[in-house]
Length: 85
Image (cartoon, rainbow, N blue to C red):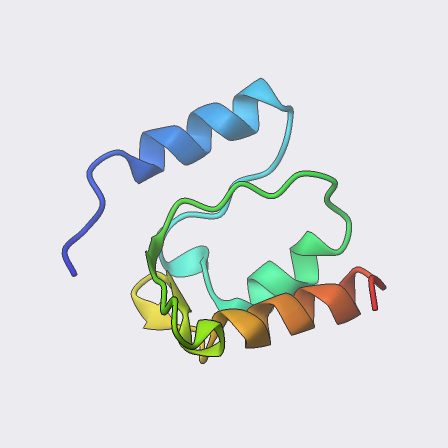
């Protein structure tokens, strides 16, 4: 996977539009996401993703080209972080 062409301007503009915070480049990792997502009402993620329609638990999101183990793992972490379970 190559770099995304427009994700940095997209993230910056979205943060400005919604008076929010943005994390770009090396500031993006799983722990930063989990620490900051719990206080957010809106999350805008500009990243690579791979979906597996046959086995959705094997779908993956990539932050800074570092792979989350699975979409399920991310959603489970978000649910716990946001007290949605």
